[in-house]
Structure formats: C-alpha cells, structure tokens
Image 1: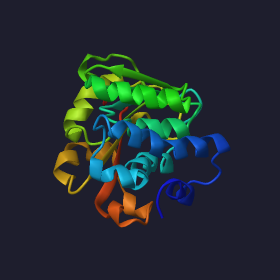
Image 2: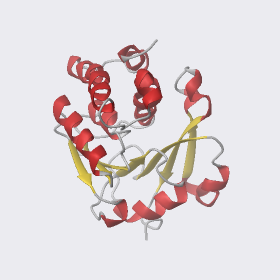
Image 3: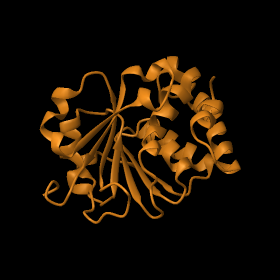
Length: 215
C-alpha cells in the first residue's frame, strides 16, 4: 500500500478537501524535487511512508484545538508542518528554515494546496522570538540543542489536552540524548501506530515544558 491509501489506512473521517490536499502532495513534491532536492531522491516514491505518515504521528497523540499555534523548526521540505497543517486546518503553523531555496519550495506547496493556516519564514531558530503552544521538529539537531533553542518560544498557558511542549521525530537509540529530561518526557514507538517496517526503529518524543522548565 502506497500513496494516499496509507493516509486513509490510519486516519478516518478526513474531509474531501483534506483527501485532495494529501493526494496533491505527491505531484507537488515530484515536481519540485526534480528541480531542487528538498527531500532524498530515493524517498520520493515513498513520500507518504517516509515523510507524510511520520509527520502525522503527532496527530495520533494530540488533537490540536482551534487557534493553537505550532512552530516547525528546521522544516526542510515542509515536514512535519505541511501534513499537520492539512490535518488541522484550524491550527496556525509557522514553518522555519534557514535555507532559502527550501523555504521557497515549501511556500509554493502551501500556496498550491490553499493552506491559509501556514506561514513560511527563512530565519535561524535562535533569532526567532515569537511564542507558540507547541514546537515540532524532525531530528534537525540533537534533542538537547533543540530544547535550548526553542524553550523560550513556548507559551505557559495550556489550551490542549497535553501541556505545551515539544514534539520531536527521530530514530535509533536516543536514551543518552534525553536522559536529563526524563521527568517530563514521553517516548512513543511509532511501530505501535504504524505497521510498515520503516517505523520499527522510529520514535516520537514529547517533552512537556512548564513555566519553570522554560525559565
């Protein structure tokens, strides 16, 4: 099973508009990847398995409330921000990356999909000071470094079923990386959410950052 069928396999009750947007992802990324290498060329035929579903794993742990603000740090080709913005049209997403050519591609894809809840900015994360409810990222740097970069970007008032914090997608052995955060950390094995072999070693880390944590 490939393509949009993978999304439908795990996520029911998608609107026709959402299904159309998820379907259009394939053509848009194939078009741009032929011009600018925004994702690995070997992954383009497995876009939904290796990029879309991992991004949507966050949606298996939280249903963002309307008006929630989410910051995607080091978005690269638009992951996890673009699939999440399709899934949560009432949530506001800001996608950051320091590489201009990738940002231009992501901005075009968001525009073609009609994602009015997405803002795309070329800037280094440490220079960006706006506040958000959640930060999401896909292994753009070590977990401790990411926490240090974004801890001051988080609001302390909670409006969701999980406290404000960080969702971080990664793989392999991360025990040493997260050891100092154990008290406020949860690690989800993505093999429990998705059956495909690709997810056997993939993980989603959630770190709750309270007011005391972000000081």
